[in-house]
Length: 232
Image 1 (cartoon, rainbow, N blue to C red):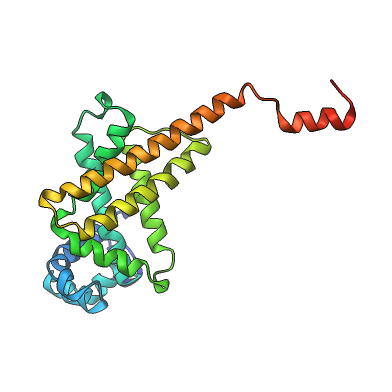
Image 2 (image 1 turned 90 degrees about the vertical axis):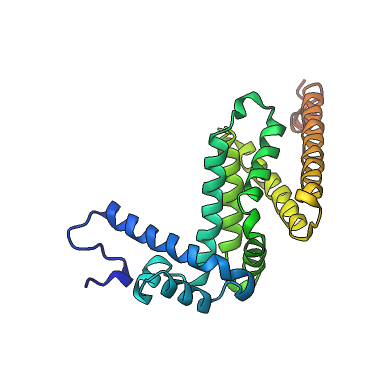
């Protein structure tokens, strides 16, 4: 048998076939792990037992998740992003206003994991610990970037970063609220989401007003230059 724990492709297989095999390993381990995460948490032991339950060797487990349990958690969150993106692709987002698109996307990201709320909560808890390194921030960025792209954002200027930073704050707050929400069908979470989006839109309106007002104001640097050098 080839040294699959070091990522070497199977004999006679292409890189794509090898990647497909590895992704299948990941999916099988995650499926076997999810029913027990609520009780056991995201632990190395959980991952080993999930691999056993999925009929995989520990070498195949290490091939699937060379970074250990953090890789499994990251895969779980990335899979949620993928499922959200697929669900949004089936909706007519073009008929919605931008705030409605954002609201729908954030809600969809939460809804795809309604059955795994405790698994998400434990994932967020684990990724908030120092030992998780940059896995948490990278996962959050991937989620908000996927949301913006899924609703049609094509910005490449400074707005690209401000949009994602703003949405990261909204998504994080709404997710934390959802963890403790006991209302029927999470009605309070969706109301909280609407309020946060409304707050963001008000800020954007204020910024737009300031930019418009700035068009009628003198350039401060230009004014200083004229005063200093006597021009104009």
